Every structure is written in C-alpha cells, then in structure tokens.
Image 1: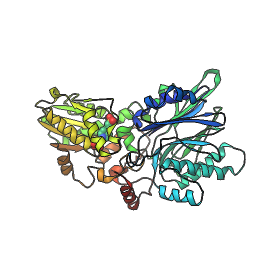
Image 2: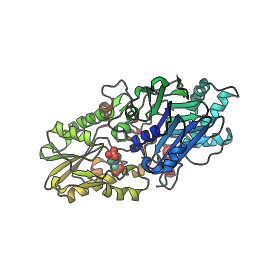
Image 3: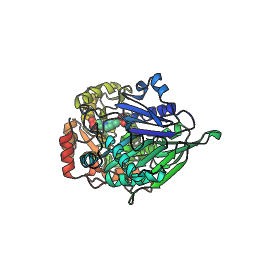
Image 4: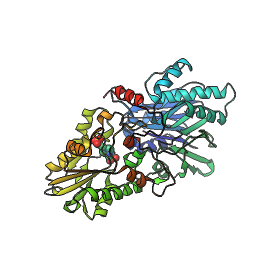
Length: 484
Ligand SMILES: O=S(=O)(O)CCN1CCN(CCS(=O)(=O)O)CC1
C-alpha cells in the first residue's frame, strides 16, 4: 500500500490525487482520500485505480487544505475476504481518519482488548480499523478531558507502540487540529517527510511512502520519519515531532528494494535504483560460479523492476543485453492480485516473448524475485515456445521460503514455490535448465552498501521475524486463516 498526507495553504485535493497516482504501483485494488475542512472530514473511497476512482464531482467534494490518501492492495487473504478500502474513520475522542501501510500481527489480542476493555465495536477484519481504534482509545486516555495539545498525541503513540505488534507506517487527520504521522519502532514500512515554501503563505508539508512524491511536488526532503517517531503538523503548518519508542531499531523491509518501491525513489537514504544495480553485480558473481556462462548468448530482464539488475549481470559477465519480453503496461501488477486463477491468466496478458530474440539462443533471464513461481513457469514456457535453445532463470532475490507478514501479500507458505524445496526441485518445478538465486548475504550487502543502516527485514528469506513476536502458532493461524 501507498500513503500520502499533506498540510497546505491552499486546496489539497488535486495534489493528493497526483501523489496517489505516483504511488499507484504500491496497490491497485482500491483507493481513498479524505480532506479536513473546518472541523469536519470529506471522504471518498472506491475500488480500482486512482485514474478511475475519482470523478470531478468526487474531487469537488474533497475541499480543505489538509488531507490524506491511500492506494491499496490486499496485504493478506484473497478477494473473498473483502477488506474495506481506506481511510478508516472513528468519531471519538476527535474525528479521526487514518491510512496505514503495513500489517499488524497481534490482531486477535487487539480485537479482544478493544471489545472487552475499550468497548469499541469493529465493523471489519481490517487491521487498519484496529490501529485507528487503538490510537483513538489511547488518545482518549491521554487527553483525559483536557484541551487538545500535541503532547497528548505523542503519549498516545507511545501506548500504540506498546500495544500494537507488526509493521505500520500511518497517517491520520485529527479533526479541527491537523495531521499525525507515525512509524513502527522497527521502521519496516517507509515514511518520508517533505517541506516547501508557499511564498508568503507559509510552509507546506507532505508525508508519503516514497520520496518521488516529494520530488514531483518540489518539496525538499526533510527526513525519513525515524522508527518509532511521530510527527504532528497543525493545520496552520506548525511541526511537532517526538520519538515515541524506548527502543527504536531500523529494519527496513528488503522487498521495497527488491521490487515494491519505484526505482526513482530514495528510501531510508538508499537509492532504490542503485540498490538494484548492486543486486545485479552480486547476482552476476553467483551466476559465474554456478552456470555455464560461456554458453550463454543473451541476458534478458523480466520488465520492469528486474531491468537494473539484468543490465549489470550482462555487463559483469560480458554478455549481450537484449529486451526479449514485452510487458503490457495496462495490466496491473499480477503478482499481488488476489486469487490464483486471476494471477495465472494475467501473466499471459501481461508479458509476451519476441521470437527473434530467442530463436536458437541460450538465454539467461533475470527476474527481481521468485515468489509463487507462477510467473516464472509461464516465462520459461514462453521462452521455449519462442525458440530458446536453453533457459537459465535467475532471481535477483534469494528464495522466498517463509511467509511475509509485514505488509506484502505473500502470507501463505503453501503458495511459496521455494518453501520446502531444494533448488533442483524448484528448477524442475519452473521447467528451467538452470536456476540461480541471489545469496541472502549478497542481497543484504547490495542494499545496505554505503548506508549507515546495518539491518534489513529479510524474514521471508530467513524465517527470522525482526519484531520478535511472530511464532509458529501465529504462522499456523495465518496459514489456516488465508482463504486462498
Ligand atoms: O515490479 S514489477 O511489477 O515490474 C515485477 C514484480 N515482480 C515480478 C515477479 N514476481 C514474482 C512472480 S511469482 O514468482 O510469484 O510468480 C514478483 C514481483
């Protein structure tokens, strides 16, 4: 999912719309926007992509100079369990609307607490609804009937960190006051703060999942919100910030760098594009060790996010780089579409092989990752039908062997092609002649090179979950809880 929030000096609806369009790659299922005008909200949510979800009359309703927006894909389960589009709204102690990128892992406990202790009713199974209700409850306690002041928000966020487990980058509008943004104590999901001068009208602020939103709006990048940190921006443009966790740690999600983020974003100070080039450098070294490089005729990317890695593989191995696959850019990102049937159909719609690039050649294909293996299998078949003599399939990410529980839709290990399989078994499963994966340590080094960050969340590759409270019981529950 992608989130954005703004405090401007003029109408904010068009800027939020444009920002959501730039974050579309982070989810195409549904989108929502809310603006704050005086003491009240205007909210619009709809299924589908940004460009089709907001008609002129919807945009006209979204008046106000403070607002937020969300683009979503299902972070767990399938289309059957229709989660609500975001933002979510609660009406006490203030009107609050909230958008969230991430996934909470103690939803069962929180649901019970909210029902028994906090006397709050939940309408959906969405973890975002849990998050906004816990925030509201803790804000009620912190405010304790006194007049509003930002410190109450920071006290409430401190309690949110204590009660909530999992990953969250979140933005909320507090009716009559302003915009609150906060990040989980592990910094798993991204959140960046930007600022620009609006002439004599004052300072304008933006908080977003990716820095390209800031660049596009001519905002200066102020900083990545720190793990555990919260910032509050009043509707008048005054900024308050506080670290709300006693033990913040930086464990950014590795999959942002593998494929989720746009290459032209800088995330936690790391250029996504340059990280992908470095992933290619290291993958090339591993390929040279394990594959018959001298026989390879061409190196090809699977568009789009594997291109930087493929360019480097070709360059390092001294092999010709060719574009053998055409991607239909009008089909959304298939790998995150709920439900297996839709996903298989979409691969054929999404990619096509150009025979002239394959005829009689030993091809080496680079994809950003192999998750379910459905795309990889289809791609190998396409390459052979197009005339390839042999197919070496390579992944710029290591084997995904464990569920991803922090906000990217790969929760069920039964769907993971590498879970419980050896490399030769996976090679056979996808029908390739050779299969080479990135090494875990190489991925970590490639992403973190030149950064002062020392850790990444790589739980879906290693089974080590940085938040510490993801145990086998939870994984089994999650497995059973997935309507596939
Ligand atoms: O970023 S892009 O949209 O360009 C490509 C995203 N990338 C494509 C390959 N899949 C694995 C497919 S599968 O192995 O699960 O079938 C992960 C996501």
